[in-house]
Amino acid sequence: MSRLCVVLLVTLMLLVAAAIWQLQAWRYGRQLAEQARLYAQERLQQADAASRELLEQRQQRHVLEQQIQATDQSHYQELHDAQQAQVRLRDRLATADLRLSVLLAATPGSGMPATSGSGNLDDGAPRAELDSAHARRVIAITDEGDQGLIALRACQAYVRALQR
Image (tube, rainbow, N blue to C red; front, top):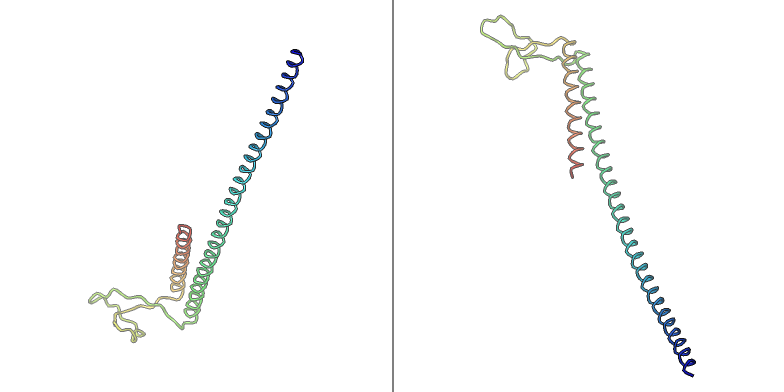
């Protein structure tokens, strides 16, 4: 009987150990499942945050692109208007509707007569009219300068927009 008790006792102990082992496995499985769920939830939150940030950056980029496009259009219009003004000025010079003149450095006794066409000037200083070819060259130079200034303003506005 003692041998039977020992066998029963050992069998009982093995059954208790197997039950405890199984219970521990279930608990450990639940802990792993909970960790996996929390990890997945954390990753989902991170993905949502990254998605929101990406959407916000896209919106900012879209706003910036619209601002740059509006600035480009205004600078293009300004350049176009300046070019049209230069064309009209060149046309007026070509048809002799307009004559460019320059102030002469009048020194006493220099013998330079004032032009007869300067009667409408307020200062009455002696002036000389430019030849139409020279006037066209002066207009071309100022046209290039105007275009350069307009391009410079466009670049400055672009840099200011990027700094904001």
